Amino acid sequence: MPDKVRGIYKLSATLKRNPTTKDKTKLITTFDKKNMNSSLRQTIKNTISISEANLDYMLSLFKPLTLKKDDYFLEIGKRCNQVAFIKSGMLRIYYPNDKGEETTCYFSLPNEFVTSFSSFTTGNPSIETIQAILPTEIFVIEKQDLEMLYKKIPVTQEFGRKAAENLAIIMEKRISLFLNNSADERYQFLLSHNPILIQTVPLQYLASYLGISPQHLSRLRKNI
Amino acid sequence: MPDKVRGIYKLSATLKRNPTTKDKTKLITTFDKKNMNSSLRQTIKNTISISEANLDYMLSLFKPLTLKKDDYFLEIGKRCNQVAFIKSGMLRIYYPNDKGEETTCYFSLPNEFVTSFSSFTTGNPSIETIQAILPTEIFVIEKQDLEMLYKKIPVTQEFGRKAAENLAIIMEKRISLFLNNSADERYQFLLSHNPILIQTVPLQYLASYLGISPQHLSRLRKNI
DNA sequence: TATTCTACTGAACATTTGCGAAGAAAAACA
DNA sequence: TGTTTTTCTTCGCAAATGTTCAGTAGAATA
Image 1: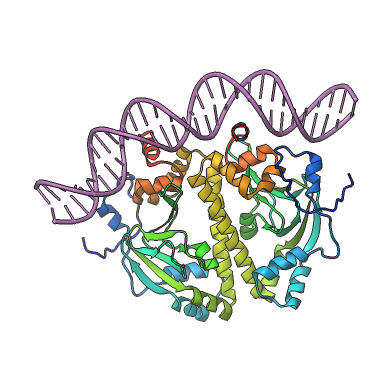
Image 2: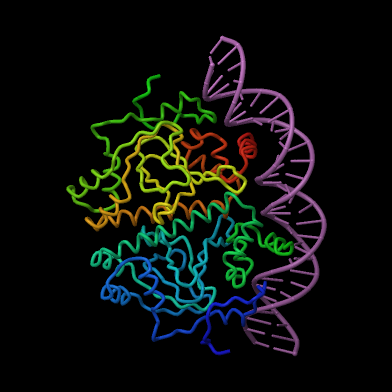
């Protein structure tokens, strides 16, 4: 199968528990030069009111970048000076816990923004790693360009604010899931709300994202 | 003991598990007319660069409000059109879960901002209740005034953005606690990082905040 | 293809946590 | 103060989840 495959995110009628590498490759879209930033453009337009000229300028600050599977967007210990918009593929944000295991904080999907929030805002070295778990296309903006944009076109501050607010709302829901639901219920929630994750993400990563051991997740799957 | 007691937040040398009502009253500061918004002023100045004139104007949009214990700042089902800054006291944010029990989402402490994020940003009726669990003094800004402020003084957008970013970082840490730590470890974390909560908040609320049953929290305390 | 390595599954057992009920302590109220 | 109500504690058992270890399947590599 060629490196570039035309396709869109598409769920099989029946969810496969262990998708093969071939299946996963199908999830990736090609890099379409003509409309390379149309999804980013649309996402911004849906969030704030901005003139076409300003929008064009804003978009010009984003640079396309292609990550191969297992490539890093950010490694632990390095400062995070970028924000990425995901065009296609998937990133995984994780950090080592006390026992030296990897804890999966979250997964970033197409049309979402991702960065190491704490490192980006404080300027401290990142305590987390951001890695592509699929071939992934992103648009990257540098921190200095973003800050310059905020000053030059203040209305774009609204975009940053709404992005952060949106993230806070998502996290609140995730906390709610831990407060009120068992491991089994959390898995079933994921199954109905993010089937793409169940399909795509290796079991061990899913388990650490759900806050349970891989063995227990394997056991839960068996009982469904 | 009179209703207004002069005092500051102060921890006893030895933490009491079950503080009496008298103890709790000591935690409350008086309403100091002269410097009524000095903590809010300082918090804003620490966050963004803003001229004194603009800061004075921004502060003029906040109105002081005193809540008695058990008073509501926001009731479930109502739209949240305000943001509050806590001068003293404590608010509890909670919502009913599937079983009809109350789930405590978080506690808001002095010098923090609080609102129902999802209701405030979307305009939908709130799915959570915000209630004072101590006599509490707050400064309130209306949504329309905040939006007007954002337009009139764009640099204040930065304040809203940083507040949301900060909240997201706090929530990320809370999620991390659920992913990596047992109920016992979560309680001990609270004990060392937020002893004021252990001291002040009724056990049942603490339990729902930690995501465990009251009986289990009682059991954990016994074993320390 | 054969080999090696890694990830997943499965089972037995240990630990943690939930749940129900009863008693004790504290708070609210008259 | 005495009474009532609420909250907290304690205990026993059941369910959920972690841990260890062994086996199996899948993927990567030569």
